[in-house]
Every structure is written in C-alpha cells, then in structure tokens.
Length: 131
Image: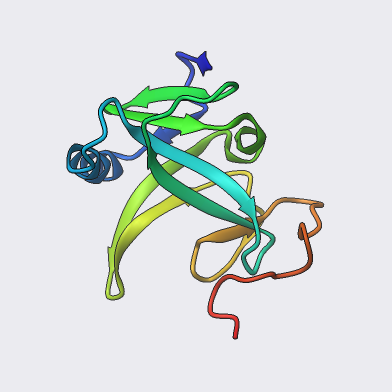
C-alpha cells in the first residue's frame, strides 16, 4: 500500500459530497472509492468505480476532500492527474472521470483511449450503446 501526500488523483467538491453520502450508507467501515481501469468500452479502456473497504498491495491511497480514493498500480498510469466528479443530467446522475491522459473518449464518457494506444482485447468490445 502506498499512501501519498501528492494528489495523483483528486475528487471535485460535488463528487466528494456524493461519495461521502454513499460511503456513509454503505455499512462498510473505513471504506473508500476504488477507481480503476479495465479493458473494454467503445474507446478501448473503461472506467470503473466501487466502494471498497480493502487496501490491496500496491494500491495508491489518496485522501481528498474527506474521501479516501484507492487506485491499483496497473490503473494509476492511465489515471494520474485525473479528477473524479459527479454529474447530473436528464438521464440521472453518476460519477465520471475527468482524465487529462485521454486523447479520445466515447460519447457516454465511460470509456477512453490514450495517444498511440491500440484498443486492448479487440476494438470496441462492449460499451456505449453498441448493439
């Protein structure tokens, strides 16, 4: 586990308010928001988030605005400098990631690609409204 004072990942004020509310209702003690990257989505990589009360070997742990953010070592290089936010729109609301490393993203905002990266595990596997 790696704790750091530097903010490799941050959360917006509104995102923190929502996360604190969700974490309080989770029933998990000392839980945080795990932010991770997985293959898939229409742009190559897909964001994932979960409430997690486990701190795994190699995790980056950042405390920002009263929220514990956990990022695994494999996801960190693609998430460094990102901000977790919460957005509300006509379709409802949800967490999103503002990622400076993404060079293109899907219209739904849940998947992205970085410069020079091929889509892992096949182009556009799953994701935004693909039928």
